[in-house]
Figure 1: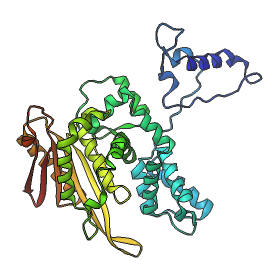
Figure 2 (figure 1 turned 90 degrees about the horizontal axis):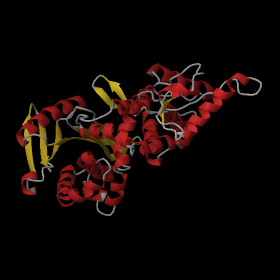
Figure 3 (figure 1 turned 180 degrees about the vertical axis):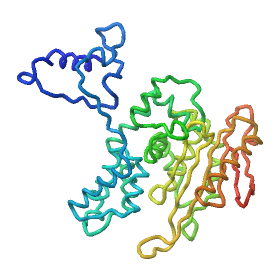
Figure 4 (figure 1 turned 45 degrees about the horizontal axis):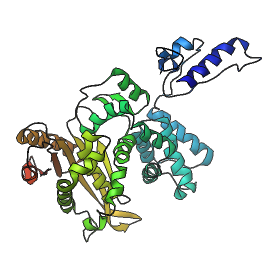
Length: 384
């Protein structure tokens, strides 16, 4: 608004006085090129663009995502300075978690090498385990960058683009400026499958942040020990049975509390799961425009430790779908989709959750449990 217009006009008015009475060079750094801003100023009847009030621009530079080789080179500088190496698996994981987002690339390494006491010993290599622990620590502490990201999610123009992604649906009504704005924020990117969330860390932060208040409300209602088997594994069937009943009793009032109302069922389930797995496992999420579903992979380590690591890892696949068609068509589509996801992650069984939001149907019609076997895969279907 007025503040930016004032800055730009001061720069222009004193431009010819440099270098004696004015800085020789000034860098304006932001999430967008100054020339792309549409500025609302009280002194002007119509919005100004950065270019019209700032015509002394020398050059616009974009700090885009780092390539995988650039991430390796950056981390190698730490090795040269300290002697501490990054294992190859750690390098690959750091890139895959961030997709080269510069701030995240630096933050992960700083967390692993300086914040984590295990990483301060320069004779110890930085492992994938330390990188994963660094990621979780950044998310839980809501470091500044991720906290600002969470704040952006509340903006209507961001919500208009991100909410359909969480649903797995399509953007039916949107403005190109809104899409470009979210692209400029670095929150989404254009991939081979169209618009998608920019990296796995953002994919995890977004639903966790949007459901954080719900997780707090669930604390006195849901306890992890309810779902731990004697051998330490998760009792997934019991967990989903309890969630199904919880959804029946509470969804109508609880979903109304979400800012992203249309994605409420998916967010409520993720809040429930996060409440159970916090600190013990992790949830990897895949969602995006036009996918028609949200895929979750819950990873839960358990068993007696062996050489400092747990001996067993339980992986549970969930696919979440909203029922827009008939039950039979939604089910057929969902079974086909979850089979592809199971094949990709190397699992033989999974859970398909179908949310029916038609107020005309009774809960007795919506609530069901079925088992379907296809091509060697067992899929348990949960109606909600």
